[in-house]
Length: 373
Image (cartoon, rainbow, N blue to C red; front, side):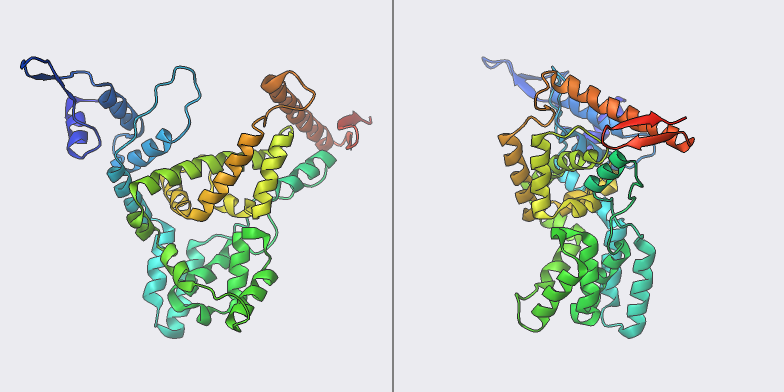
């Protein structure tokens, strides 16, 4: 880190100016040579700004890091990057994302007839993969404990079905049709509804027998760049808090499938997520170690008040029962919890290794692997 770099970062608004301190009694003021805020901000930026890397990517990683709770004793709170720089970085990254390119493409296809529709579906198919989402962790856990085949993916339509939603943005919902849109919404996995459930709801709306669907809202929220530009500074910071918090709850839910010892507090949190029918959707939008692009896209999704409400619901539940790592009847606390999990994983690994060699049977009742000779 050089003096010229620091000055360059100041000119672009990434670092504050050194604070002036009055000497009192008319003696003027001096500039603090070592301003802790400037030092910590520069250190945070330097951690993420490698040679040849665009500074906007570093700003996003700094913003993400600043929003991560610091748990180590004596840790100094990390300063925040300027929100104006964060907004600029979000817009820059999102403009280059596949999601935004798809939105712009579907808008250009509007009114282009069948030829434009064919081109739209072809382009969307190239940008969207066949991902179905993670299998329900409860099913994964049950399979592991029983020694059976572990499901790799969730059931239902894969991610390519979502291109129907993209088509509806550009071509109109009537042009795409209720059945195709029902399949697309089912692929998102929201609210635990199947494609048939969505088809019935959308069909009723078309016939005027149910609540009208606000397709304009869908078109508005599909433009992630516009959402970030409309959001206030406070909303961007709050969306980060919601994203970071929901990522923790999502991770606990996923780890349940990897034999994490269960506790009443964990079960209650999973129940809340299930009541909202949100695990499949969270699986689509949350990445544990996100790239700047993934972070930007997830943060934009969580600008929606709906997810703020979900986060508050889970935080309220956590406040009522925070003992997520306390096993009833076990006074060893978090240490014993961790040891039990490690033993479970070790037994699973050893058992599957023996089974692969053809010399073991798994007793799901006893939870032990027995050599049969």
